[in-house]
Length: 214
Picture (cartoon, rainbow, N blue to C red):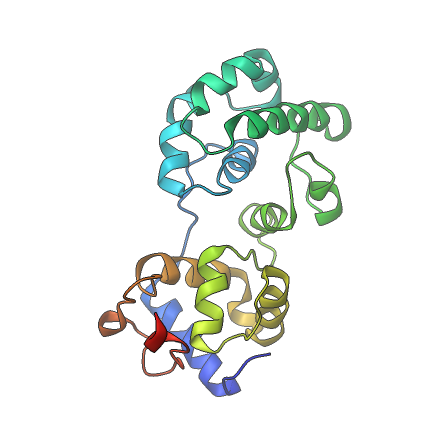
């Protein structure tokens, strides 16, 4: 449930759009397949850390066929700096094999198909649906899970609850890019410790819940 009035919510997203008219993911990729790999690697990692690990990898591997040719041990050599890399490498190899066998090597476009892939949960599926297929969905990461309750956009305490709240209140005209605006705002402005309220474009609109205790 949101604690903000509808016109306040409208103004929040109007300002976020004004500040960043064309928001983009900060994960580096060269195509849809490499974006899926990058998102899978990003669990419990910063985008910057993933980008460092994939810089050389994506010069060699741009397709599931090339990933299988590289092999699991070869992949591990590239992603050793990534948290949980052995498990992620295993999932990426299995995912690549399934893409070839079931989807002709293409990244599928439905949530059900995406979530059928090893290592692909709801958040990863939402990122692909949003970034690749421009669907108005809401991937919820740690930044959104902190920012939405803090601002009053949601009182949810779980990713799914926050996702459902946000999807129910964000004006449709802003829905496609809302995830990026909130994520980037949480990453660079409404940070976990000492949020930068003095430079925040929505500081006068948010409820700042819990800030006195942080």
